[in-house]
Every structure is written in C-alpha cells, then in structure tokens.
Image (cartoon, rainbow, N blue to C red; front, side, top):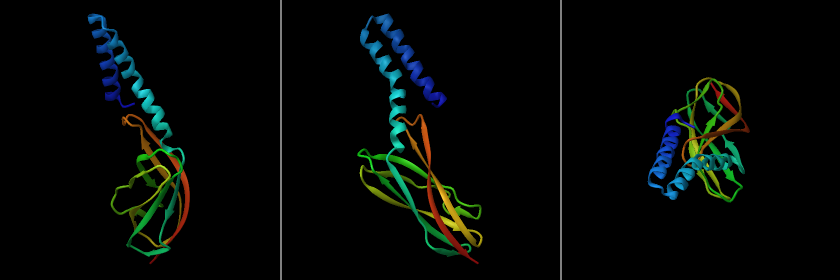
Length: 160
C-alpha cells in the first residue's frame, strides 16, 4: 500500500471513530469499519486480475538494422469478468528496444481476445530469441500492483 493512501484510509477511519464516540452515532462505526475493509477487498479483487489470462506474441520474421517494426501482444481472457488496464512489458534482448519508450496498456472483456501493437527498434543485426513478457495489473483503488511473467517464445532475425 502506498504510504499516503495508507494514511488517508487510517486517518479517515480514526476521525470517523472519534466522531461516532462524540455524537453517539452507531452508523459512523460501521462507516469506519467499511473504510478499513476497503483496501483488503480491493487487494482480493486485484489478486484475481491476472487469473484466466493467456498471452501470445506476434513478430515479423525479420527486419533490417535500424528499422522500426511492429510487434503484437495477443491477450485472451478465459474468464467471465473483464480485465482492465493491464500493462504489458516485453523482456527484449539488449539490441532491441521499444521505439516509443511506452509499453502497451490493454483491457480484455470476458471471454474475448485483444491484439495490441507496440513498436520495437532493431539496433544490431543478429538472431534474437524472445522469451518472456511481464503483465502488471492494479487493484481497483490503485493501491497494490500485481505482476506475473508469461512465457511467450518467439524468434526474430535482424539483417545488416
């Protein structure tokens, strides 16, 4: 949990408890309890954000040295609930770099697939083996981040 968000939740709950004690209103105790339970519920929802997901990567067979090419990440959600705002980071070899400097963020509806492009610059010739991608999801409140690595093997050839 991020420090300032932790302080906001606990301080608000503390003042609700004080207000409940001063005004003798039982409803404020319930509000404080709900406010304290909210991060825990958000954590449980965030933990399930990466369940029932499958990923694949589509790359062109080859490119030229210095060329910018489009790679694609294909995400398939086997669950019924949508998965929102998933950030995908590709573990690229040393001589391949993201052309935009930005990794794709995607959302997948329940039972659906989505194909998202991202640009990669080939800096040096060679045959490259791409293995892993890391997908990061946040809980609904943005307090906790959950990451998972997926093995998505691909081969990519860069000509001089």
